[in-house]
Length: 261
Image 1 (spheres, rainbow, N blue to C red):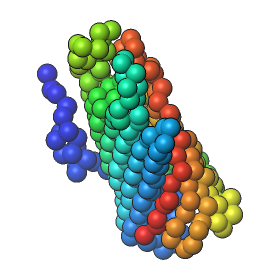
Image 2: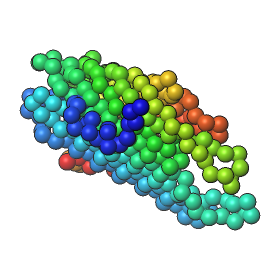
Image 3: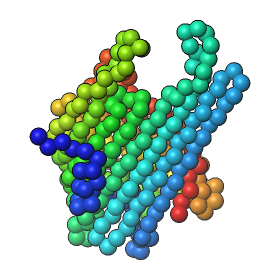
């Protein structure tokens, strides 16, 4: 039986194509639009917490292709009380996500054929790793100077390592591997409220026989200067089928500085 691994995903990404640049196209596009988000929080005293979020979103604009590459990481440490009432600082979140999307534009219309691949490594999640690839069709429902909205859908394949928790903390978690066909659908809406404020909403659903993974991110960004923004947002990740003791939904509230290049 064919087993999908990260090298297979990377190989697939180099020969397929996806994408949908979220910004509306101008007559003359820049070859690259790159945004880097950085957010960090550190507290001390009665509560000690350290968290770091880092994200790169790079869009490539070619004559017949629009490509997007995303990398996102989240790290968090908290002060945890032990059974003997002492406290120690422990890692409570460590997550890495990467995706590549390529879209071949069809004629003069804003429709496209796409290929997509993603890989998630989550040290504390319901799935320790999650890999997806998909092919399909996308189209812009609306495209204007201030509002842009696209949708896309297509079949694909996923492979995940589900974490099976134990009631006894002294026994390490075990891993159950899942894989199979899935259907992926995604949409993104971007609204330039004013020249200095922008709202963005993205949603993706990857549904298979073993699990349905839904991810959503809502953000509002305001410009500080020509290349820097302050961004606040809320992200949700949900898995429909998780092991007992694991939460189905993870949420992240963030305040980041975003740099555009």
